Image: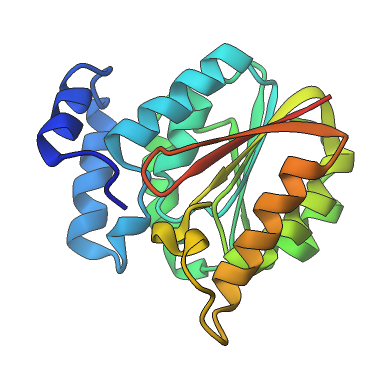
Amino acid sequence: MKFLPEELEQYIDDHSAKEPELLQQLNRETHLKILRPRMLSGHYQGRVLSMLSKLISPKHILEIGTYTGYSALCLAEGMQKEGILDTIDINEELFDFQQKYFHASAFSNQIKQHIGNALSIIPKLERTYDLVFIDADKSNYSNYFDLILPKMNKGGVILSDNVLWSGKVIEPLTKGDKDTEALLSYNKKVNEDPRVETVLLPIRDGLTITRVK
């Protein structure tokens, strides 16, 4: 979703921190070999994720929706030296691709890959989290939130991607459009839950920052 003229977006990219070389390689290979490369966080959003993680300095991070591992590596940049990042994806075919880049990074021993249904995996995770990134099937965003919140440390942050859904959240709801309906419900839920405070940012396709009180 484009909020700004292309020239202004390029200016923003040019005046933000550079994309690390490993992530440049991951970005290129994703676009060459993997379906739906638009799902990749990309340079600008990746630097936003990195900056937020560095500001939070999390010990434990949870990511729901690994895709090719780009966002996990961005989030890991701010993780404490003894920290762990758990990342969950349902697509087992991407496991080796993810692992290739995780092993090539400085965080190879800190990133734990989980393959399967996140709704089943999350309850089995024994850690509590300082930072969570939700970027998976939109129909389950509210379910993920309900599972995650009891595992969040006070002051922890939940980041939720694609919450503007290409602008569909302000358009008349189409019958059978379950993803948009789910995101409308989720956006309302996290904004009204008294246990958290939320701000929705118009970054790419929308990024919500939710802080646990």
